[in-house]
Image 1 (cartoon, rainbow, N blue to C red):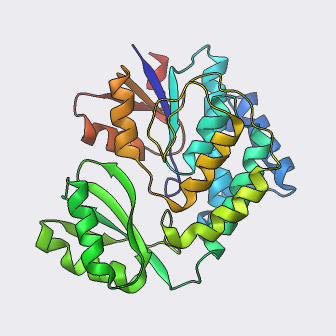
Image 2: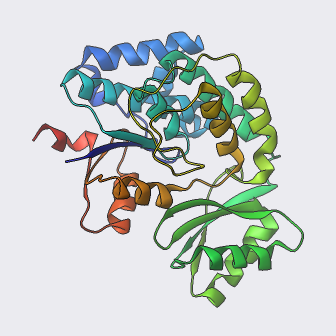
Length: 304
């Protein structure tokens, strides 16, 4: 059996996530405390008590989801369990890199706070948005849809989540036009309630801000393979600068999650464990491969 730990990104957050484990694991409690210390404020209070509006703010959701993912991974590690490969969806890539030994947890907490703020501030509120396109499996057709609807504005694929589910991002008017045209391509469009057009070229200024911060952070060698969002390649060794460059590109380039799943399957992955809040990635995996063995940490199925 070849096991992948996969870490979810923003959108999986819920008030109280991780609370069931705080009284059960000293490692979970210590992880929450480390995050608070790294930021110099009580992120744990926001995570555990909310309100949801405050937790959902990108500057809070990003380090909070990282913290829960790393806390759960540390529980698994204490149980003597380890993956053969790791990957994370968008923000989840930071949890994956902590698990792989490349990023120090405290550094990752500060980086995800900065990344969240930079992404939120890169585009004025109301200028950009995102939409999910359901039912179109051909990437070329998605690109054609974006080209038709852009009309000189920015409109790009931002996340290839799974078969027949792609997210697009760009200027509000362009996204709205794409939603109207989706049926012409036998697709269904659902505009997302987000505050910024994540993972498209409008976010390039956020990548530049993150690049300066990453230059000041030590990045170590990988202990286990990981699959980056922007390349979807099984990576066993790489330099610190290569990891930095991928994290910078990730901000304004599409998340190649469907391609990442295919890459891991190609390398023999037949067991998937979602390590973090919720079950979002498990659903994407099962839609991509109905025969996949996919579970999540919170169900504790990993104990069997």
